[in-house]
Length: 523
Image 1 (cartoon, rainbow, N blue to C red):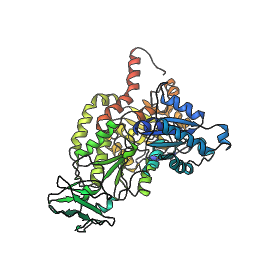
Image 2 (image 1 turned 120 degrees about the vertical axis):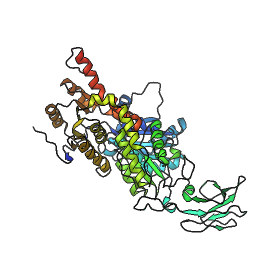
Image 3 (image 1 turned 90 degrees about the vertical axis):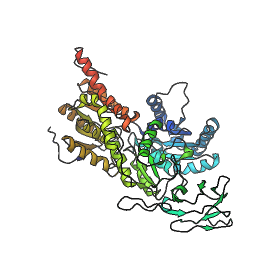
Image 4 (image 1 turned 30 degrees about the horizontal axis):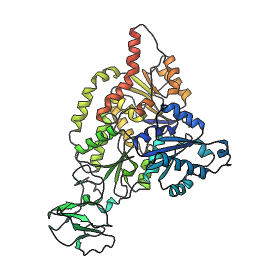
């Protein structure tokens, strides 16, 4: 069998099957990210066994998730699902008292047609606690798409904000036009800021409220909203001109005078990584208004018309679609912040959309590449084959090509080409820049045919799911579990070294064993 490389990216689809981990595993990182949540997985004993084994739960640990195991009576519709789920939710509220309960649907709930979306609102009213329903079954979704379904469902619970009334649309040249109003220096009468605020003057009022914002003077000469009006904020009274961005009521990490529309980032990352990415944008004069998911359910970001959103992971296409179509947000289509090249491209795209001139990104990227040179010497000229598992394959392949590796094939369970359009363009650009052949991209690959191609190509490394690692190692192929990239910190400038640490570990291990006279090693 002959393998050819094309001048353009070649796409193919083989079996139509998902050869991945179960998507309910998203519970393992989401319950830790959303600290005041509780996840209830509704499935069979098989689901419970999977969670216990895959997540490595300790005997004495009390994780904020549980299994609602379906028995034969549930499956045959002899028991009352509503009564049982209500009883479990009341027990969860009594024992743990979370801010939200997230129901995770499984394959079984899909097959027996459990109406989780119909029962949740009724139980939510009965117990007085929010219930979010997410379908994370392995019939429709790949491994990491479990998070995608949870975030898409949770986006409907975010507060509403119409930022288009505060910020005008971005013009074609990319510069912002923030509306500005004059405030009186001092005055005894409250100020009435009329709804719409665009080009409208402010009038004095004696306290009447017709859906407008009413302010009065505080002790420190600041404007305070009269009770019952929104938003809750204080404005300085110094006779100066201020931008109406301060009237948005959004969370601000800066001085509250941002000159760009609100920006919300979506994707579950460790808190240390979210701080790093937020600080990188802050250096460019961009304030992140919030993250989806937030650290606490009660702190979900405001969404609506005029709010810009940008993803940090390539498997969140359903969330992106929901944010655009249901919440009327504006999506920034950018490569993903994986590796120095991807992080720089991600920041540059956000800056271009929000009308900012990037500062110092070239130098920052060059500095990171210099610190990686010891790893680059190990991988330069080596070849890699992605069998496909976690939907991070395109971004990782692009980064490894930039490191000097040759990527033979990128297998991926599912790919939304629209959501990953910028990443695909950067992959193609990187291959041409490095003089590397463009890889073949195979969606829903046939594992049998993939193994045949691996035997022919003999790559230096195969990044694969756990099911195929040992058989490939027995055939003399170095492997790395793709699931490790899912749980490792790989985003941002500062974590690029961790990616190469994972990639080079099997190469360094086998090189050391060969030095001892061992020709092969089986995990």
